[in-house]
Every structure is written in C-alpha cells, then in structure tokens.
Amino acid sequence: MSNDKDAFVTLISSLDFGDPLYLHASDTGVLTILSIKLTGTENYIVWANAMELALNVINKFGFVDKTCLKSTTNVVLARQWDRCNSVVISWILNSISEDLFVGQIFSKNASEVWNELKETYSKIDGSVIFKLHQQICFLKQNSLNVSEYYHKLTSLWRQFDSLSELPHCICDAEKKTTKFNQNIRLMQFLMGLDDCYQPLRSSILAKDPLPFVKAAFALISGEESHRGIDSSNVQPAAFVAKINNSKKPISKNAHLKCTNCNNWATRLNDAMK
Image (cartoon, rainbow, N blue to C red):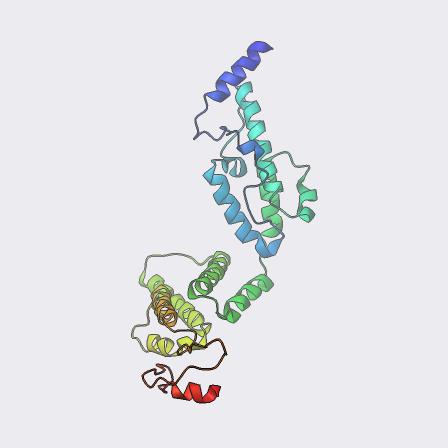
C-alpha cells in the first residue's frame, strides 16, 4: 500500500504544467473561476464563452470537450483524472445559479454537465434575438463617457454576432456585407450619442466613404478629451471678489474684467450693494 502511494506521489509530482492532469495547489481551493453565473437562456452564450476561456487558460477544457480521456492502463493517472474531473465539475456548478445547480449536482462527468447545460440553454428563439436587438437600438450615451458607451454597444454587437452565425467567405460579397454591417453599426453608435456631439456627428455622416465605427469612435473620443481639457480651464466663477471682515465688497477695480460675460467688475459691485 505504501509503495502504491509513493508511486502515485512520484508520478503526479512529475506532471508538467502543460499537462491537463496537472493540478496546482490553488486549483483545488478555488470555488469558482468566473465572476458571472449562468441563469438560463438569456446569458448562456456569454457564460459559455467566458467559461471556455477560463478553462482553456488553466488547460482543463479537455475534460469538457472529451479530448482529455481517462487512462485505462495506468491506475495512478486514472485516479488523477477523476480528481481533475471533480474539480472541473465543481467550477462549473459554482458558476451556475442555485436553480440550475440542483439539476446537475448528481452528474459525475464534466462533459456530461457541459453538454446538458448546452442542450438546455443554448436554444435561441426569436424573443432572445429581439430583446438583444432592442437593447442595441435603444442604448443611449446618457452622459456616460464615450468609452463606456462604446464598449457597452460593442458587447451587445458581439453577443448578436454569436447568435447570427453568418457564413464566411473570401469573395467580394463578403467585403460588401462587412461594409454594410459597419454602416449599420456606425448609425447605431452615432444615434445614441449625446446631443453635444451633433456637429461632429454631421461631419462624420458627410464623409464619403463613411468611416468604420472604430474610426468614428476615435474621432468622438478625441473630441471628448478636447472638451475635458477646455472645461478644466474654466474657473468656477468668472472672477473672485475679495470680501473684508464686514462682508462688504471692496472698492471698484476698473481693471478687473470678466472673461466670460465681458463685463467690468463694477457690475458685480453694483449687484452686491
């Protein structure tokens, strides 16, 4: 028995970091590897992509897509596979809502859990696409900075693309389709901007050919930065009047002039009398 244990420790400790069966000490102590939880059809696409990315980072997606198979000839490696499989199941279960958790807790294989969730929640009907398209059409900047607004819109576009599954080709039609989609997104981006960008929006729409949405974002973002620099130079008040201990205005200063309203300081003194 002791020899078997020693053989297990020796073989497992020799596993390379790139081996799917390798487990770092921190892997078993992590409850979840995602900050979002699967709640159902409405966020399955986002959750699945995030989970696949997280599992690939730690070289454990093979337990989900069945490319990492359990050894039938080496007992030590088979036991390590069971351990890794249980860890992956725990990660998946801890990244789904409590309502979904109960239905998967009795599963013994990570690939079974993954496929069951996929078959149940990856079914996309018209209502899901409608809701996503509605979010895109009605998204407004509403005083957000341009980057925040643009990245929210980009996230929605990517989700919509993942549902569309358009075919890819290398012919001229592909280029025309790409340009058409870019024009649609340019309009969606410009429509949601705050009214203060109306002059620049008109300037962008007057360009021929129309720029890609990334170029438009760069122009709007540059304008936002320029506005920020200008506003930082504006004083809270056009000028400051010194008040003496009796809280009466000091004598008139004919050389003090407001750069905002172009009036002399005497107007302020008259108003304070």
